[in-house]
Amino acid sequence: MEAVALRLLLGLLLSALIGYVGYARQSLSPSGVLGAVLVGTVIFGLGGLAWGALLVVFFVSSSALSHFKEARKAAVAEKFSKGSRRDLAQALANGGVAALAALGGLLWPSPLWWVAFVGALATVNADTWATELGVLSRNLPRLITTGRTVEPGTSGGLTLTGTTAALGGAAVIGLVAAGFDLAGSRPVGQVALLLIVASVAGLAGSLADSLLGATVQAIYYCDACGKETERHPLHACGAPTRRLRGWRWMNNDWVNFLSSLFGAVAAAILWSVAH
Image 1 (tube, rainbow, N blue to C red):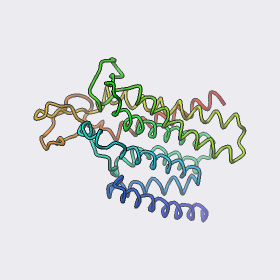
Image 2 (tube, helix red, strand yellow; image 1 turned 45 degrees about the vertical axis):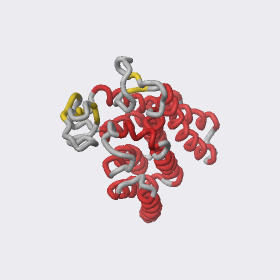
Image 3 (cartoon, rainbow, N blue to C red; image 1 turned 60 degrees about the vertical axis):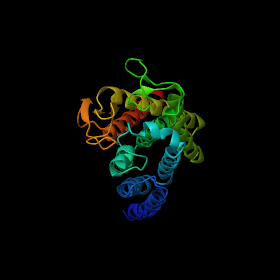
Image 4 (cartoon, rainbow, N blue to C red; image 1 turned 90 degrees about the vertical axis):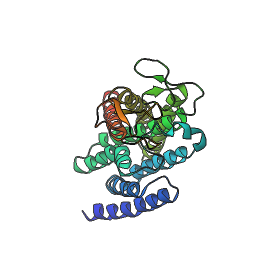
């Protein structure tokens, strides 16, 4: 127990430092700092160095991409429910499943928790990369359910650029995780399998995110602007929005949480079948 308490303390200090940097770079809101500290403390403290390193990779890469070509992305930002500064709910939505995997690994030790953790982070990294780079595509996105073209930033819209970015985001998490496994003298075959599982599960989780966004996520409409948006109760222009479709409680945070859970479960199943 003393070792766990010491690791939690170290996790608290490291995650607080990361939260401070994120706040200073305007990647986190004040509540987002709290979320980063909560998630980071659990993952660093209960998982260890490798688990914490993957969280840092996700945070650094997603934060960097959120500020990449911000001017070009400003036109579609009004569609999203929140801005580029992550708040408490977003931090928990993106890191909650990963933190639960770290807790599960402590309470019921099994290699599958590490695989599930990698799958969860691969999913949220894939989804973030897809969103941040996909909106820069020169081609209009196509809705995952019907294939019809939609405006950039529309929930459930896919582009080749965004899908490729999603695969890249998942693979990066897989590469870092595989690197730690290789350094830990895991067999090369298992290391390669983890990379493949992370890439496939992360991409699948990202597509699940798009499917939820196109079907059950709450989407609103601003009559003043004549535009669809995830924002409620007020649009970016300040006018009230009305629900157009989707389940009222299914906001983007729930979509992110459920898709990361899907990625975690998919990774664990793929690993179990192939291993």
